[in-house]
Image (cartoon, rainbow, N blue to C red; front, top):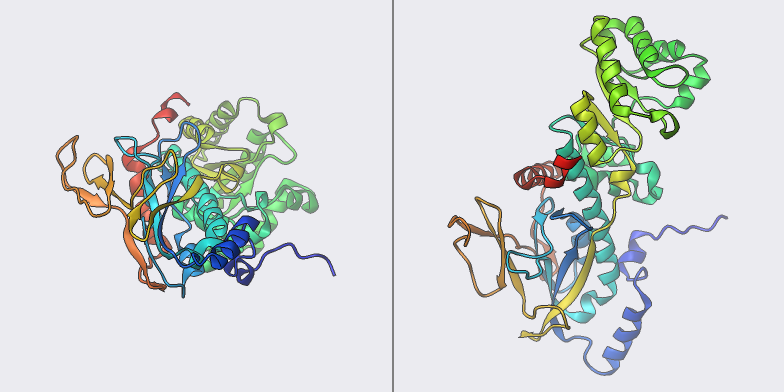
Length: 400
């Protein structure tokens, strides 16, 4: 039997995916009589270079791991925008856990891994969606991650803002239909682009949009016109998945295909692009005339958000390691200008120092004594992520 390197849910929940030092120090703490000391721990993140914000994701999985343990948890809801620091340079916590240290110590590694990866994917998805200027974006990147992460990657991308996912597993869990066109291998097996398109049009379900891959054997412009003449009004879009070795000026290629389709009377045919895209190329291609985007590696293999856990209270008394601020904290956000302010938990804030508008607390109770008390649908999370990302935008994209 082949070795199975996939860690299952029970292994994760038991702490078997933890760094070894947690197991060792827990043993020491137990022998020293301090394993059940009550602590407050905060999770905060360091964003990738040049990122001014992130989208928080992974909470649902974290709560599942902590369920049944004697813990209280407050958190930003998934889809919430977060920053590294507030207006005055204080780190923003995205989540707070309170309880005996022994209850969650061996889960620290797993929790950090969950929110670091999921938030990284959701953040990249939100940036790409903003770059697309309202046009559809689809997550095509599960081939760039371990298959055990396929549904996790697609869920994070979806709640981050993409309009659909290619993965069957995530689509089933989300209650949406998976999105996809056809691979180059299919066109080659069929023997010609025309044979591939005709068979797809004949046998694919009627409600599947007729999006034809148009770059397998001939020039993209040539194949696009071939597909349009073959399917006429039934053709919804052509997909250009031009490899790096032949891309050249991809924006010009999109403009050329758009021009020739319009000139030939096929202005109804949309142009979908895919292959090695990120938020910068998506913005340029959107301006060039692309109508929709399939984005893979830039989303599914996005740089993780570097989250860390820091104990900030022991038995109710403020503590911190060097470089951190002691005491449990709440994040307040201006409902008007979206400025953030961090303050001690027991100290409430009401007015924005910048514009005078009302402030709203961002950390809400999500678990009480091990029971989950907060749950949202993927759709409501996605809506929040899109609203928050649209509110702040991505200034650096103007230079794309």
